[in-house]
Length: 320
Image (cartoon, rainbow, N blue to C red):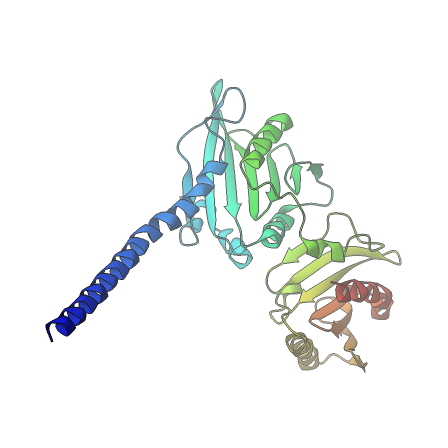
């Protein structure tokens, strides 16, 4: 009996020791997690060049961080633009010229949800006739600012205290930031959908993370300006998660046109459905649902003229 009792007692002690060890491990993990999370969030600080980015240009104060709750404090009036693109964190710093302390350069580094989201924000500011620069995946520079995107980061550099700044200083600052970002300088694959399509206006491609062409049922997608038969129009692709979701978006658009009293022609095929109509806002439209995509063209005098370019886009999308 004594031997049996000792065995039971040893098993109990081992069980207690195992429970205590498990509790200790869980405690360590819980206590360490905030440190790891903080370190990940705080790492964006290191993207800002210190002590400066060029001779005579030094950081005025320390780097300031903003999150989705405080972004309004930095860009009130613009913050709402960033949220649909998965905004995560902003690191900002101001640099002053030691020879002219009234001239400052403000550098903002935004961490977005993805490479496509970073391009999306960038494309909201880019202009087709802007002066391009080879920084990050793509960038542009003017007399008052420089912007580029790289990996999931969007960078915005602006002069204050003066109306202009030498472009070589903007470029030096942009390159200094770029060196501190992840080295991925590729463009989002979604841009290949429109690349090389005849008539697409260079640098007009945009990614909109919500309400493409202003309609909530077109949740997100690409849009670009196109010269079609000498006529300036726009083509777009709506990305959905499934064929059923894309068909629902198509049906929602058709219902909207019907509610507005617009006549339309609807054609059904085995693997797709399309409509031709006059949109209340965009004149002639042609929209086709194929798989998880809606492909369309707007602002046309003759909507059926868009069919060839829609076919090209469909073929490319089916190969993805």
